[in-house]
Image (cartoon, rainbow, N blue to C red; front, side):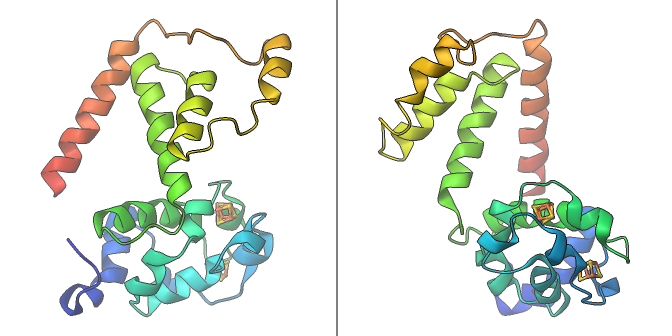
Length: 187
Ligand code: SF4
Ligand code: SF4
């Protein structure tokens, strides 16, 4: 479903509410979320601006911004909000809606990193750092980026050649299968 055509635009705020139960109409634009966000200098829209654009049903602006992709989900904004709006949760929903609406992602690299990271978790139940770095660098066509750090990390035992697998990896695979099923039933 696209949120960028005229029919769905008026439903955008309600769609966010339905996804996570957070009612952005309570926002009083005090700016405390943005003031406390450690990553706000890197964002094209500040967290309070994102909330404002949701309030006025402007998905075209919100879903194309880089803010939700850069957000580290640290929850500083959520705990600072005097209206108890869980902004971090809203950022999470916006990532979902942006992918669903197939808008050009503000931060392609972050999406690629997420895909590779989750694939590693699905296969082993935990991340294999070396595989993650190599696949990520290859995907970005920069195979030797940070290569000089490899030997140092090997020497300190921070990077293993073979990845470890947890005992109950089939349970992790089951979680991934179920989430795929839920996603398909929603689309
Ligand atoms: S801290 Fe809460 S009320 Fe203040 S601008 Fe951010 S979302 Fe709105
Ligand atoms: S959760 Fe995201 S938006 Fe909120 S303070 Fe942390 S990085 Fe900033």
